[in-house]
Image (cartoon, rainbow, N blue to C red; front, side, top):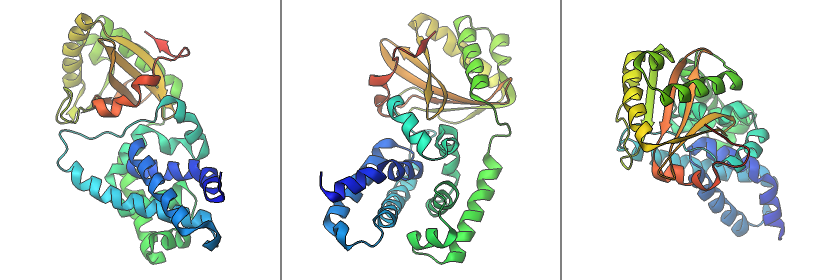
Length: 298
């Protein structure tokens, strides 16, 4: 292995963590890393005073360009857009490398509130611990401009953050209750699962059946899942509890294939938000590695 490749592989977890948080999809993050690796070989390690800083700068700017294009594309996306989880076997190493709470799917979705420039500045400063001056150099902007971007990002994220900080065990118990309710679906049982102001968001991307707009309120969600529950009883769906991006998640298998990946937010007692990823291309990376021996099938 040549020196450039050794250097790149050494920093790869950090670089991937940055690119994935910027873009919300592993495939796009991998594309950015590949482009950066090609540029490193073309540049030559010997010419770099600080190869890590150079790589972080290249990754950030490549991801920024790609995110700006993605923001435009998502304006024409069919229905809500949800981030794509990491495959389970790649989940924990990335989660352990940097602060894992910033890797959760709910947090990645929250980052969508930010402009690409705010997102980059926030991630560099708040997640990857670069000073304002260092982040400003990476982004090629003034220090004050970087501070303003980070401040705006903090404000927007604070407004959208879940009101409750609930541990994984409580989330898992709620998912188990959800599966039990879907096994014998009634309106009252399902409604009791949801907070009054609960929200449902589903991403089918126009390729799978999904709600085209977020649904709000316990009664609307109970009616939706009552209808789905009756359908799934006939389809003989299989439920699987797993962990995606460091948090409990529920996988739903229909006709031998992975049909939905679901994660929730809660107040500890009831579900406050439920996210259902049904886009087949986003699920494709998960399907080959789901239902490992340690997974809980229900």
